[in-house]
Length: 184
Image 1 (tube, one colour):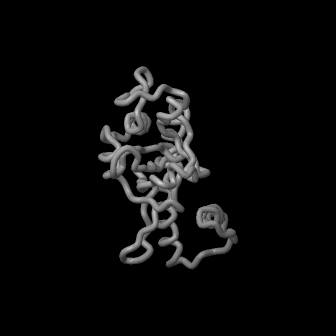
Image 2 (tube, helix red, strand yellow):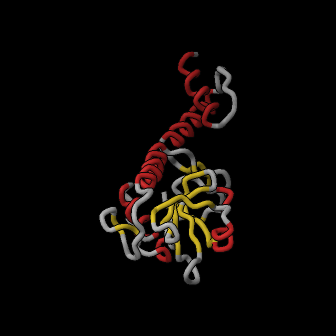
Image 3 (spheres, one colour):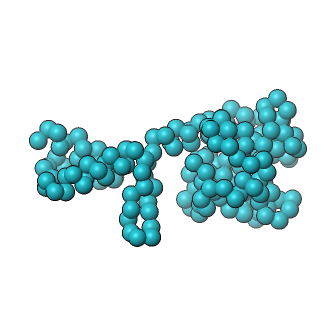
């Protein structure tokens, strides 16, 4: 009975329910263990023929944390058109390219090309580390930032002249929002 308690409690925690220590039927137990192993390995569990639900992956979570932490460490750096390093300063896509490279992800150099990578994310589904795009000085994705949660993102603010927080609810950004992508 003891060998069943931890997997059942873990399943309850992972699936947001309450865990009850009870013996699972033998045929379903093997399937349960396979599902649990897949969850812990960061696999995608099939739900229906066309729909898949991504499950928690510790590797992705740590890379996401690294992206957000790296971006936060660059707050206050100088904004320079064409800049792509802490030494020279950053423009928006240079900041994103640099931060993601720290997490082992190579992205193109410009916002419009970066927008072509990753999965589209609805505004209500934004998670820290997602890239948010805006149409600012030209049509399409011409400005990019890194979403940090709570409606905030880190970007290059030419108005302030530094890498700074932006607010998704700011009228300027609301009127220019172009889309969001999840790269990790």
